[in-house]
Structure formats: structure tokens, C-alpha cells
Length: 249
Ligand code: PEP
Image (cartoon, rainbow, N blue to C red; front, side, top):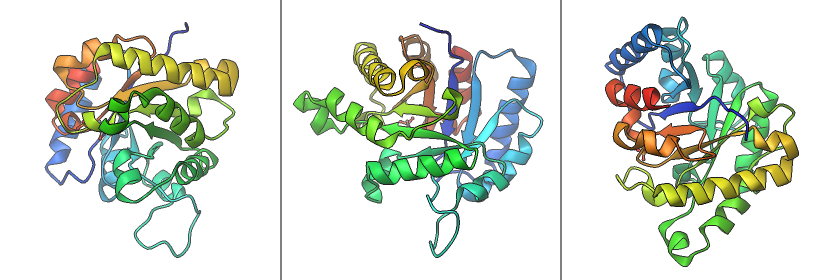
């Protein structure tokens, strides 16, 4: 297996205000003072994206959006395009988060269209997948997730252009994490599916784990084979917690 630099991405969701910049400054200072073995991305709400990007302009940390529209522009009230993400300084965009799939009925086709738009606009899509508790208990989690990820991932030319995140829905914001054994099994299955679909390049795509990642469990989860980083919700809002996860990579 090849060496992949881990990616730690923070998803603020609908949280954050002017006070959050203190947290951003702390992360920036930690990153400037320490050597880290990870790429770091912060995904604040769209209204804060430009400000956070400016705050991090002299840092190794990058920024991303939490969602985008697949169209370039037009009558899509409330949405933002990939070009708007870029203009605000974002280099990544989370697509297909379960909160969007469930709350806004986003299908695999919708997610794929957003990921294609991101690639075309030079923004790295972080394509999310993950099963519900019901699916996990039915024993079909692997089949469901593999199908979801393959249907949601677009073709690409360079493996650095695309990131995948496995986030079991029952572990998001619940304090429950998947066991290392479950994560290992799932990430191996996702890796095999990516290699089958994309060949050699599929072996180099980062596969992030997400779901109640905290400083206390980060080392163990990030140590699992084929876990190439983390997508962090709640713990990305506090600089000390986020830093604890980054330094565990
Ligand atoms: C997320 O929403 O991407 C997530 C993993 O949230 P949390 O870390 O809070 O479970």
C-alpha cells in the first residue's frame, strides 16, 4: 500500500460566528509552530468562508464549503456555485453529507453532479457516504455504502482531485463511533471498490472516516488501514479538540 498524506477536515455545519475566529487563530498558531503530518481543511458556513480563508491565507490550512450547486449560475435561490466557493477562497467542497442527503433529498445523482461541477471548477469534492442504523443492523452496510460511493463519485483525471468520506449516520454527532474493526472492514471495502472502478488511481484516493471523531479516539481511528484522515464535525469547533485530532494524524 502506498503512503497517503492524511487529511483532517473540519465541518462546522451551521455553527460559527465572529468568536470562531479566535479558534481559527489558535489552529493557525499551532500549525505555524509545529510540524504536522496532515493536510488541514476548515469548512465554515458559506457566509464565513471568505473571512476564514483570509484568516488562513498565510497558513498551510485550507478552506472549503459545506455544499454547492451543480449549475454554474442561475435561478437557484439560496444556493452557491463552485465559482463562488473559489472566489471566497475555498479549495474543497463537502458534497453528499448525510444531513443533505436526508434533509434535502439529495440523491447519488445529485451528489455526483455537484462533484463533477466541483472538479470542473478546480475544487476538490469531499464525497460523503454512510449507512443508517437500520441498514447497519440489517447486515447490508457494506453493500449499501459501496453502491452509494460508486454512484456518487465522478470520473477524474488526478487522484488528488477527489476525496471520499465514510460517515456512518448513526455515529454522526451522537458520541458513538464505529469500532476499529468495523471501520477497517468498511474502508477496505471502499478501497477495493475504488480500485475496481478507477484502477491504480483508486488506490491513491483519500478515504476519510467521520462520526464523533475526538482527540481521545483519533489516534486509533487514524491508525486503521485505509483511513486516510477524518471529517470532523463537533470537535472541529473547538481549536484544542481540532488540534488534538490533527496532531494524532
Ligand atoms: C460530520 O458531520 O461530518 C461529523 C462527522 O460530525 P461529528 O464529528 O460531530 O460526529
